Length: 144
Image (tube, rainbow, N blue to C red; front, side, top):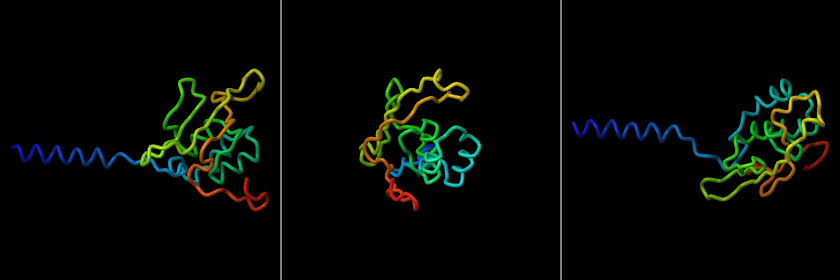
């Protein structure tokens, strides 16, 4: 009876551990897949600056993006300040901050006619601006 109980307990522990995916230090691996990005830009990208769309499609973040775009690319923040204006992405292997993002709230009264349910604008990127990925190169513009 004890052996059966221990075997079941061990199996449960293995199953619960197998379900936990370790957080990748390459942040783009935490977000949506590459083939899903164009869908989001086409379906939900109204009002997004064309340069930001291009950067998003390449899998990078940039100042001026909103929280939705960043969350789609890198997944939810690992740590968030109480006011929601600072996000941190952590490398769980080392405990170090990979990237820290600072947000500014957009005044919806200045932008009438647009859905501003996620009305924050990325204003500062500290740490690795590429989230562990190599720096992007755009053929017509060089490195951004």
